[in-house]
Amino acid sequence: MHSRFSPSLRRALPVLALTQALALAAPALAQDGPPPTPVTVVTLEAKDVTLSAPLPGRVAASSSAEVRPQVSGIIQSRLFQEGSTVSEGDPLYQIDAATYEAQKAVAEASLAQAEAALKSAEIEYNRQEELRTRNVVAQQNLDSAIAARDSAAAAVKVAEANLLSAEIDLDRTEIRAPISGVTGFSEITQGALVTAGQANALTTIRALDPIYVDVTQAAADILRWRRNGSEAETVEDFDQSVTLTLSDGLSYEYSGELSAAEPYVNEDTGTTVLRLSFPNPDHFLLPGMYVQVEMPQGVVPNAVLVPQEAVSRDRRGRPMALVVNAENVVEQRILDVVSDQGANWVVTGGVAAGDRVIVAGLQKAAPGATVAPQDQSAEAPAAPEASE
Image 1 (tube, rainbow, N blue to C red):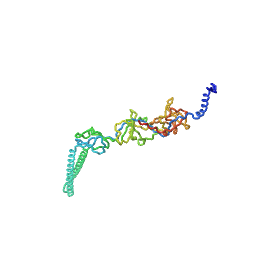
Image 2: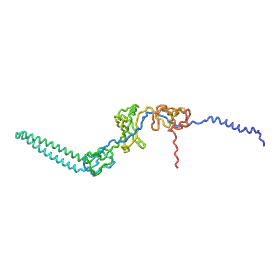
Image 3: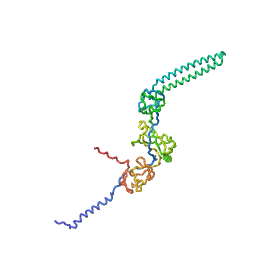
Image 4: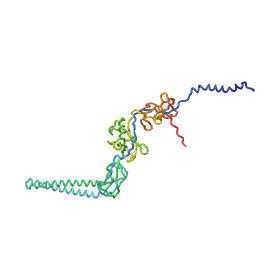
């Protein structure tokens, strides 16, 4: 059977059908268009920001005392555990006290003898005074009795002082802790001979809570800090907390405060020493440790903290960020960056409080493009990874 259509018409039918289909689909395509690019934004806030600088420091005990004997003798016993915590007045060592007990006994006997002599002298004085009133004896006899009585009274005072000295020496045979703190190793053992005021310490006690951290800071930085709005004129006026980073890079859990400052600048280095005080209840910080302190350097009023992932550089090397305006259109802003603080940049110009900066999706966003912003805090949590 032959077709009713000519060969040329049969070839044109598919083209006409395709043209009609495209014509019907064109309005729908034009109406949908490409969707806005999704981006993640952070809304900025303005606040006063305290700038800080890392300074190296060394840990030092808040007080330290070397224990030395005040009397000579043989060490009979050590009364403390090395490395233990002691309180002021706790016994540490016992020196053989036999010699000092004997000296005390001699002093007591001497005092008794002097008191007896004084009593005899007073009796003689009273007798001579009565005889003198009756003109039985000469005045010289009474004067001699007075002198003997006064000499005996002075001898009693000397004997009392000798007894007190003997009691002090006897008491010092028990060596006690001069301060509260943690003891170090004992440098002597039982049976060792020690002498009063010897050069070598028996042990050292260090107070560890609170504990000090000494840092050095350039005098120029201190002047800059004072000019940048600090109202502190003395150590007591400095009320900003100080944070500390340990040698392993971890942060110390307690914050410290400035407790003292050297009142001069080293001529050779141009620096001064600042002393910081930190709580140390667990004795985590030990004297001699190396640490790093974040020391406040000044205050920037009404600064904006911009996340570092939102900031890049333009062709001229200037810091910039992409901001989504009220119409959800991307704008490029050049920033005035003062410093960094953690994961943020401290910015004083280019953006303001309330601006929305793009922190994710920067590769797909360009100035002038319309985007679909989503606040970072409103993002859906990531799905947990499947366990193997």
